Image (cartoon, rainbow, N blue to C red; front, side, top):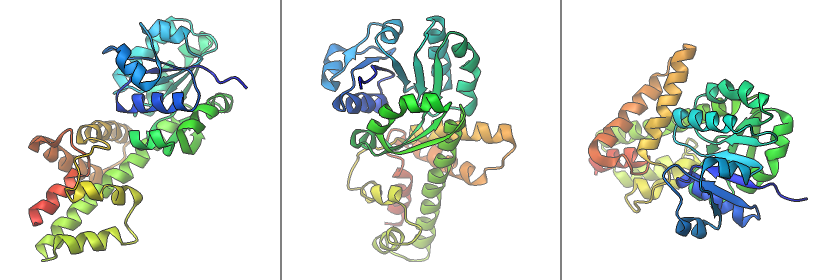
Length: 289
């Protein structure tokens, strides 16, 4: 069976990792980004560079969006709808509001295009390894069409419901991770005040039933052994804004996420906005030295 051609709009850390992974899995990939895609970067990723969004759309059967925020997704979807993309499948992997794609559903349907939301759980390194998670919302036939691409990116694929439900699932998942770092920070602060040494606290927390794969994977960051960035503090703050906007709109109280946001804002104010998110725990650990 011939693989469908894939276009990727947005080639930041996540978009670039998707492009590289898909081309290595045998897909013909074309990329485009508003900031410009050099021939050198395209060659390094093993993909074709598009001169513009319309050209990328013409060269692709499935178009994947990997964009910064809701405003960027709205702008690209408006432009794509104007191109009358009959037969195309547009898949948004950005972390945005569940309502963002729903706003465009009728317009895209009228021109014969289909939409899926498929936000990603995990960072670029997990995409490159094919171990990222995908939360997919949309019609079953569109999900099945996208599945060969999804399987090249992920070994944790969840079709969670209709359009927008994937975004909601991603936000719920993000909330658990946001809370994890806040609770670990508080535990480190309390343990330090109670006289526990940093080594003993890490030993206890990393081996406890409450320890998660996410926490264990960030131990080198927490211990100051690496400056590698899986996901930056600035990205967490952006995603928190989406979570809190949705929660306010639905009347759901989120005191734990408000506390976590304050911790991440403090880390950003101290100059760690582009450092890994686990820096919020490292800072607490360093204070307890």
